[in-house]
Length: 138
Image 1 (cartoon, one colour):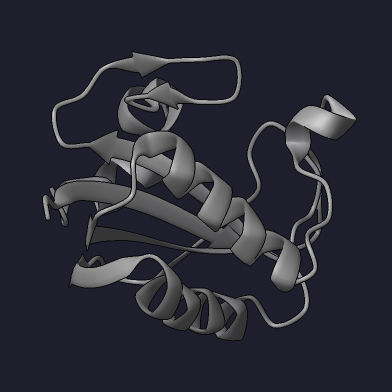
Image 2 (cartoon, helix red, strand yellow):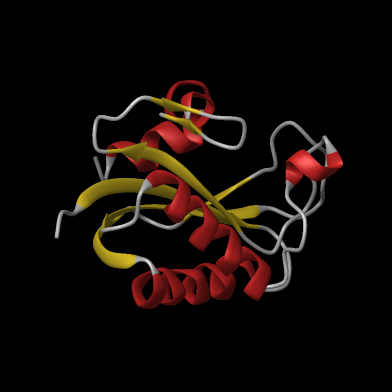
């Protein structure tokens, strides 16, 4: 079987964010693929929306057999398992969230669909906090 190398970015800013990240990492390891590298866990202020709750963020590199769409489905299932029933596209705005898991890179693939764009250019090129921790796992 063939494996792909993927970079994910995780964030949480409610209900014990650091623990939420730890739970999500375990779920990714058990349900999606092996984690090869971790960035440092950082705390950041919310961007593109107002909140009093700071984020915990981490970037990871994983090895998975999932296709991009199957991976997206599995990550959305983890978000739902953890209590995030709707993502930002549903609300058409950013809000506080128990967990957010974004696919940043998938091998060297360029992929565009209605639900998924790889690479995730906003996190990869525009958000300074994300660029820093993503560079740690690329």
